Length: 200
Image (tube, rainbow, N blue to C red; front, side):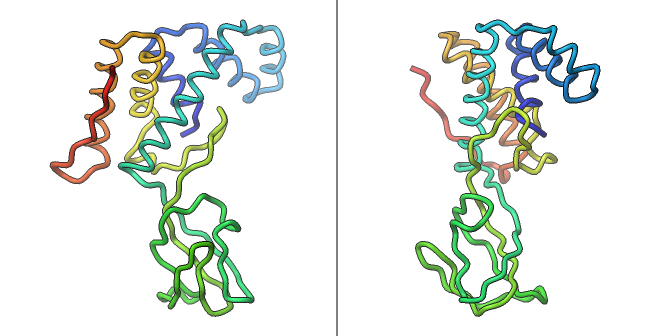
């Protein structure tokens, strides 16, 4: 799932036909050499590009909110250290919580957490951790498990946020309800509720 997949859903929900045309044209460029000619002929207006920029920013807002509050992104990363320090800044993502540290044989390793690094013995390790994503661009792949969190679900969240920016508050509430319900159904423990937001 890419950011563009999310935005295509949101643009369809919001009837932003100029944005859906833009996404179709850019996909054609990536898909074939002939597509690059089609894109060169397709001229997106400044208004369309402004909408795409707003939608991209809102997608990052929704993704970060979901990752920080309800469905943490997690990954496992192999590292090697000679001085016994696994420095957080050297990891691929912005780490928020260490889930486990395993040695090269797959066994749990002893470690100690410090503000800027994990202290271990020297060698190879696999660090499993939760993280907050950086800002994604249109073509970037989003780090959620797609089986639980889909482009369609995130599209509801983006649609809600976009409606807020346009003063369409009743419509925003509708999309937000669908988004919140989807998050509860797809990702949260039974009987958990998504935290409400104030619209005014």
